[in-house]
Image 1 (cartoon, helix red, strand yellow):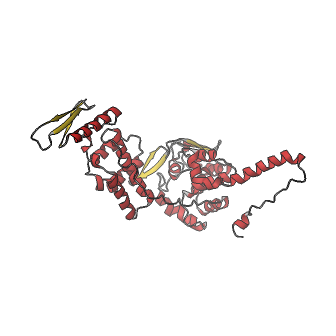
Image 2 (cartoon, one colour):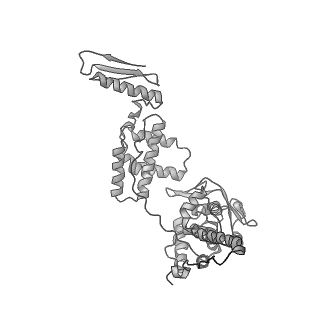
Image 3 (cartoon, one colour):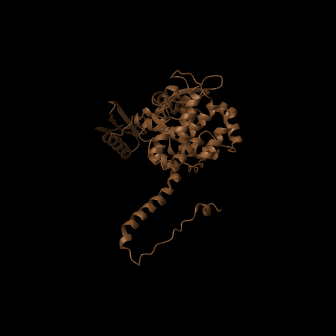
Length: 385
């Protein structure tokens, strides 16, 4: 229950108050009784609906709250944690660090988003910064510091069109493998192209997780670079998986393993002077010269992961098989990335349905049945040949 009292001879004589869920009394003074009544009704309604927030709790600054929030994010990988801290320190806190959480407004956040866009940040970078701030404020709501998240409803820049993936043919993969000088590099290229491993998964692969006879790799670990050092942890999606290899790739890998230590914990691929491969050094020493010699300038190691999806699809693999091989969280993610690889499925399905129907009706077909010619353009005409 609440109360309203009049205190004569005061600039704001009407004082309203109530005892909150925290057991403490909360009150405010007003010049008019109607304002005191309106405020009291609003506060009591919040209590009844379970959305009441201590008015004093939101006085903590965003910088203070973000430190508490980050300390409680126990499920983050070290790389993700470093990314969050980088965004907080470079983008969020310089603008909002001294602002009390309860005074964060949608208008201020929208202006901040607009400023980043005008500064020339990519739409994906702006969205990443916004998502970190939004998650921090959502945690403040859950903690009872504020009643709602002021980041909700803020308009974000339109996401840039997805960069077109680059796919190699099987012949181009062979050309690239032939352009490198060692069996170690040759086997790595084949495993990336036909196994679909992420670079960090290949770097962290150990001999004990390679089963040559079954032609399988057990992907349980990945290496990521954080502040100049390699950190070994779970794969990107926190999901372990078995990667299957064609026989010739398993044979290439077996030939390379003859030169590696037999210790099950030994890395499958190592730098020239020992230790794990480093991306930039490998690019300059092996990869970039190789792609230049193979006539594939501009190709990145990650393109071989896309190539794996393309090569599997070309041999009839369905979306579930590709998802399992690549380690995506769900088939929907695989489809969203590689939708165009499955577009030809409609034509082949329709052709099979047509054939099944023709087999069904052909014995009873009469002169009124007209067969339509296949008017789909040939591949050559589509390519302007």
